[in-house]
Length: 521
Image 1 (cartoon, rainbow, N blue to C red):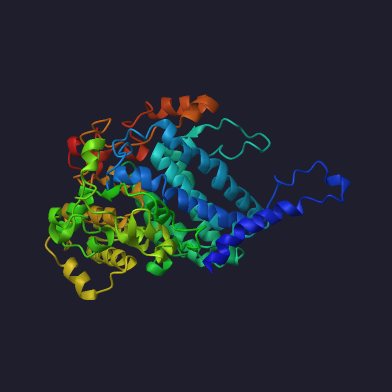
Image 2: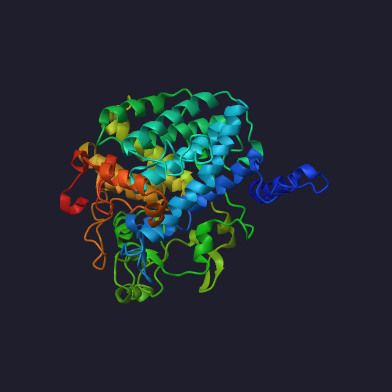
């Protein structure tokens, strides 16, 4: 089914262009058949879904940038990203630029057409996916074009949109998701097989909208607890519901046909420069975590391994120091490898079909656990342990660990059994960070918000002596929208790694905050 959904998109888009070309009609002589003014919403939506996953939970922004900042993985060759040297404005700007002119623009067209046709089943999913992407952009850069974005080809629109304050971006996203969940409740399925995430189910998209709303609400908790509380309660009690099991989570199952593969397996088919970060490895190994065997492979030289044959690698090393870990640190889990690679047979060809996750049920459980522990969102501390255990169990199941005895043993172990209070909040934060594996941006955002795991720190060869709080604005923005950048800098602060974005300006408000030395400048 997924093969048909995705591979048909390119053909349908080409067909849309072909329809616009009629050599028998003199009236169409001035029509460019390669640049149609409109296209069917279905294939445009399908393509946007694919691009969104490839970009933010795929092999570029995620695997080669934010995963190193979040310290799930480390770089054993060419460690410039791991040292933050290749997180410069020219290197990271492609994510910003392509997101705006590609899928955000396309989703805007799908949404506009759905609104015109009064089809919540079309505009709702488009707007939810847009909101998901805007969340990544604003959490990476802070103030971004939002209210005036994507309007350059509209009457009165600007080619140099203002950069909205992150506070206003969040307010806009929360309002959009609230309306979409309401509009889609009971609405007809109008996307159908063009939707490779939920098959057009408005019920499923409504749950995704509210779960994403809960993510954004919790992100605000340190800087605006009142809004966070109100939005959490509204999202968690909304009639459209939230994720209730792993079956509900938002994911794209790749066709694995050699054209549309899981993008991470494509990366690992030709590259062997990633190793498991010592930050992640130490936590997994110390707690005898059943996910160790999924997220890590035994080291190449077993005589140099740690417990169970696994070992992590420090982040942020020089090239010469990093290279020594190629055989002495664990590769990331075999699920990332497509079987036949240029450096040996690792993983399985079936891994090319592995899902990319937009948001998981485990993440939603940990949001609920934290809300309960903090008596927020209409929940109480008595409920925290249940949500916490459900989050760990959901993460285990997501990665194929279903042995009830192994899971219960882990849940009862000394460092994992829920402790309550601030200690419990620390456990929730660390387990959430683990569960966000392969979603570096969300793991990085959670570390900035909670200061957990507190062992995340810049490596000895890092270009700055702190973990980045944000990325630099792209070089191109200084050229094409200098007034927008200038306004953002005036409102937010100097454009560098150290400037905190809106929700990150009160780090000490987090109960799990450790110190400025551990949590950044």
